[in-house]
Amino acid sequence: MKKNLFIFLVVGCFLYAQSKKEIKLTIYNQNFAVCDEIREIEIPSGKNELIFTDIPKFIEPTSIQFSVLSPQAKFNLLEQSFNYDIYTSDKLFSKKIGEKASVITKEGQFYSGILLFYDAGNIGIETKDKIVVVNKENLREVSFEKTDKFTYKPQLKFLVFNEKKDTYKVLLKYTTSNINWKADYSGNFDEEKSILNLTGFITVDNKCGIDYENASIELIAGEIKKFIEYEAANRKAFGAAVDALKAAEAPPSFQEGPFFEYHRYTLKGKVDIKDGEIKQINFYNKDNIKVEKKYTYDGAITRYYHYENWRNLQYNDKVEISIEFKNEGEVLPAGKIRIFKNEKEGSIFIGENRIPHTPVGEKVKISLGNVFDIKGERKIVAHERISQNVYKDTYEIKIKNFKKEDVIVDVIEHLYGTWEITEKTHDYSQEDAWTVKFPVKVKGNGEETIKYTVITRF
Image 1: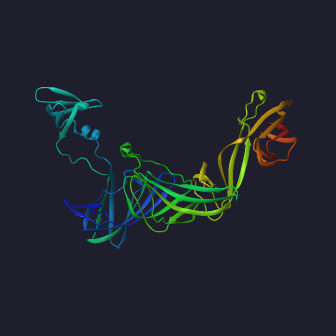
Image 2: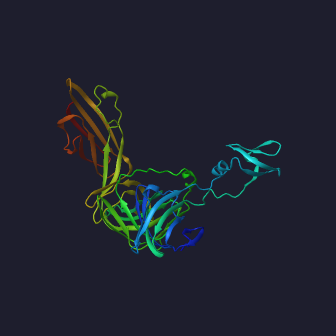
Image 3: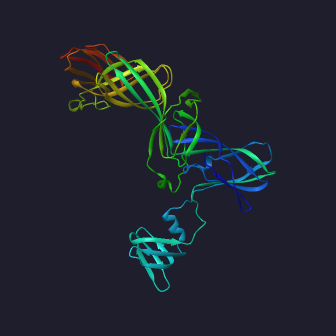
């Protein structure tokens, strides 16, 4: 466990406090987290300054809360501040303009004088008798007098006043961005038995700038209104790439439950989440889920009424393949789901998609791609304007099945205005106010044609 996590300042004297005692991290799937840290600090009486250096680089300063849990004593927080003026070469040079600098070029030439300027290509040094301009690419070394104007890490400072010396248990609460979580699922589909074995992992991605060790973890699934009011000036400097992908050796499980109008997943046990690390934790395992394989044809490319442009409408010829199942048991957070089909030789990847937050009892539809052996055609065979705002159209949809076996294809049609289907070759169901579905059986190596006439009023 790390030591010297923050510095306590008393009349120029540095004291080192104990490590964090408890960490609770509530991570939202909108790239931010709320952290509660309980620490123990021995604080002398009087006015003192506490300096925390083990804080995230992407902390939101206005979210910081500092309070004393015990003992009950007169303890006042006078002010707090966040210092993120961290060393970078650009900041160092800009702060040192007008001060003494020494330069050694790649050829070994030495110059000493006053730093006049620093730009994208050059630096300027005023020596005793001349001004020297050196291309930055030709620099081997630049040195300045040591400065105390910069910090090596972001610093959080608290000015406090307490009546007597004691060891205090305090709570530090803050919000940080650049830490996120998502759900990733992997399913093995047995087509003969029409069942799916599904596994889910929570993937936590920490880029906030610090490690969280032995932390209690809660995950919130939902869509919460959140304003990101703060963006550090040196944010680009901290955009490091992910270094590791690690799954826990003995994955802890999550307990799911409602939280306000969202859903909360609480990790049973504690876990380390390192900065720059992607960690995967198993949270869902369910076998023998009953699934249906569905073929769907939605032939309309445009999503508006054609009026007099009906002869020029193009159509989509692709038939979509998907699998569907009813979610039973627990809420499924939004995430990517990959499906593999079981074969004698092993499993073969057959497609992936994203699922939304899915409550218990809701159907999950996973679109896997387009079918190779089933095609569709769609056209308007008759169009008539009955009056100024009333039209009559006849549509013809043809499904061609090149498979040996029979298939059922759901043909989706989109209608507009106030509509009425007056003639039809097949029965349909109304999916919503402007969508109908024709379930059509197509024989192997055969085709089926759906025809219907609709009157539309605008």
